[in-house]
Image (cartoon, rainbow, N blue to C red; front, side):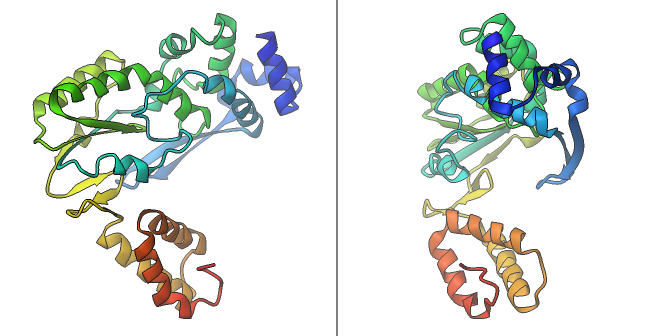
Length: 289
């Protein structure tokens, strides 16, 4: 633990007195607020203080040591929603399942089981204090996604083995589990997946379990009948409206509209060029630069 403590002081510039003060009561270092979910409702986010955030960034090299399973398609180097969707592009049938309260459900025992081969008991205790909140992982801490991916590694491997019997492709984007196949998928498969997830200490959100064949969508990206990726017609219509309002009527938030256009560029670069050619004549603010 002394080595990690010294590393924390060196990387953060915080005194040992301040570090010990943070570790004595990490809960007071968080600001909790809610944000709207894209699917409706609100999500609670716990944002760490600047000092605790610095500590969490400093321990990332220790957090990232265990390997992740290839099914983990979020947060890791080189991963993206696009690459995640591309892995299912030839699947005629898709099953989507969701892990309920994913980050908060990651407990101390899971953490120790995963990191016992990488850390001493004392180091693991120190890191758990830095990365946890109320006995789980906080939504809002930079460390939470990387820890969750590594804790899920063995479970991801088990889920991947299901492909041997039903010709599945499996990926997991954070709490979203996606299974695709060229043959129709049954409820019996969902039941098997649920049992594996429950055995790992998690719970499936039954309200977000659905099968797709006619309209296939993976982490918000539509897979067309031509096996191409698309943001969808409604997304494009709204974006063109937003761009016109921003450039012509000076209405709307430039950053938000630019972010939506960047997403379109990432998923459908050719269509993004078409949009640019249509609206660039109105661009007096450098939107398309």
